[in-house]
Amino acid sequence: MAVNVNDPRGFVPSRHLSGRIDFSSNLMRVSANNPTSLFIGDPVFLGADGKVRRIATSAVSVGDRAPIGVVRSVYNSDGRPLTHNLPGTGQFIAASTQAFVDVVDDPDVIFLVNGDSAANQAQIGQFVRTTAGPANTALGRSGFQLRMADQTASAVGSHFQIVGVGPNEKLSGLGDTAFGANQDLEVIIVDHHYRRKYSRVGPEVGD
Image 1: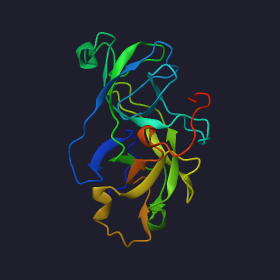
Image 2: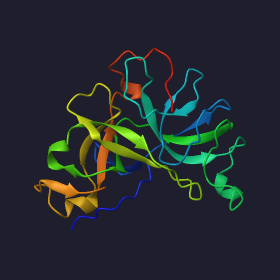
Image 3: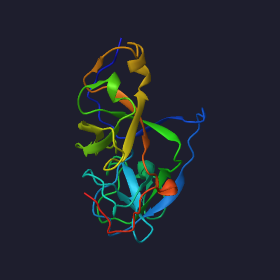
Image 4: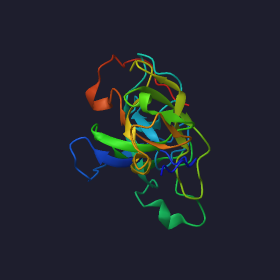
């Protein structure tokens, strides 16, 4: 039976195109000029200063910078895990705060993410943008979801491609016409920072 739960929690490493089950990450800096808060599960790109920022949810244009990965853990400016700050502050990087984040930046990682509405079998293989719902500041979890209304057959204008449904959804059978509302979907990053297909040398774009 499918598990259709509206459970936005950002992007969660699920599996790997090669079949591997481990997910390496790299420590990256966050600038004090970062315009938005960063949560575990947020998709990010590298700004012109070489530091991490959250991707925009708007349509992707040629001048936008490509995603480099997804935040897996967060640290303060001394490199200390923010779990040490509990319960005084949540596990997230506030806007305009210098810090560090671990980023899962392997272009072949498949991420599990919640759709913001119902999906169906025909959307497997389609390309899609994101929507940034309210994040969980207590847990430090992202509110990012897939914007299902914007799914398209063209990679241009999208950050992600749907490659499958989540493990719980597969229990209902991949042959079903519709999977129901708010299911988990599996995606890969389109035009990853390490595999650029388009010219992305224009201005930075962020929420």
